[in-house]
Image 1 (cartoon, one colour):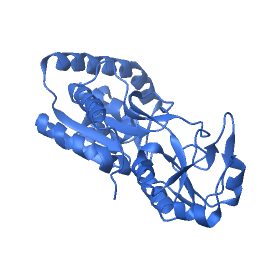
Image 2: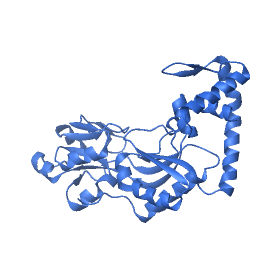
Image 3: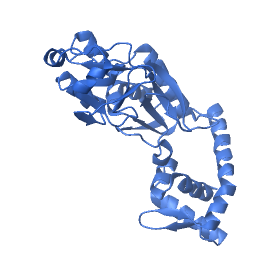
Length: 296
């Protein structure tokens, strides 16, 4: 049966490497098992090149027949595991860099100590990681719940705040309405959907021409602290700076883009114990200590 599972994983992930991550086995094992399946069936299922893999017509037809069977089997095994076994195996977790340093690292340490049979791998990246293709079980995501097939649980409600340093405002003058932003230097995160299209006012989106862009909220925040311009940043990244007076909020109440902090995971009828317990761990940890950046 593992031969069929290996083939289905390659079809779903689009490569032998991603399938190996998903199955938590060496790439060579996946290749051997698919080759064994082809030999047993007497047909070629996949066309392999150095850069890609694609299904033959027979391979596509076979995949359409067995995909649901493999999924049902995996869910049945997961249901039994959930009832009988403690969390175990490899748990692959990803999060944006700032959230990883700010919140995730302490949760992972506590989780690993509580469940010693789980091997945890943490990958921090300031990009939208594809959980299925890259073999991740859980991700932390900020902003609106992504429109995808992923399942998720909201950990908190967050909103972007327009802010700048007191020094910048003293040099460039106050901002009393959104139209004045055309005359100011702006700082933006180009990795989020609203990076340079700021939702300021009901139904209004203001397109800005950023002086500085980055895919990291840390970089955008640091630039604002240095007085380089005005930034639209999720509140959880600047709460401590606003409280300490290092940043000031501009146009309060005019940003109309509420979001959240989410823990997301691939859809499944039955969550594996390692995923279920980690999601519960995150939820409890956040309830105990809401996010905020520590004062410097």
